Length: 140
Image (cartoon, rainbow, N blue to C red):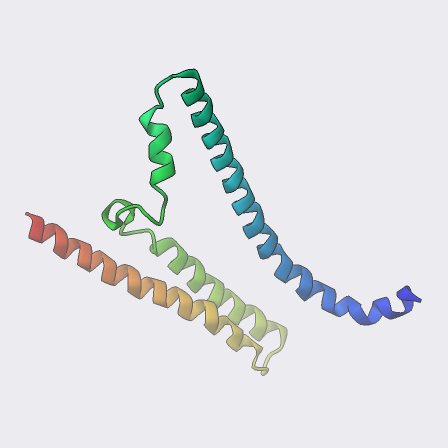
C-alpha cells in the first residue's frame, strides 16, 4: 500500500533532500564547534585542578571569535572578490545551460539571481577597497 503512493511522492523527495543538505551541514558545523568548546573547557578545568597555569592562547581562542574580532583585523580587501567571480560565472553558466535546454523559454532568466548577487559582491568589493585605501592614506 505504501509503495502504491510512493510514486506520487517521488518528485517531492528531490527538493526535500536538497533543502535538508544545508540544514544538516549547519547543524554538523555547530555540533563540531560545541564539541571543540567543550573539550577546551575540560582542558582548562583540568589545568586549574592540577594547579598549572593556563596558556594565554587557550583563553584567547575562547574570547576572540569571528564576530568579536575587530573589523580591521578580519578585513581583507579581496575577500569578496572570489564569491563575486563565482556567482557571476554561475549566473552566466545557468543562463547558457537553460537557454540551450529549452530555447525560447524563460528558464534562462534563472541565471540572473547568481549573476546579480555576484555583481553586488563586486560592487561591495570595489567600495570596500576604496574605503580601505582612503583610510590607509589618512593614517600616513
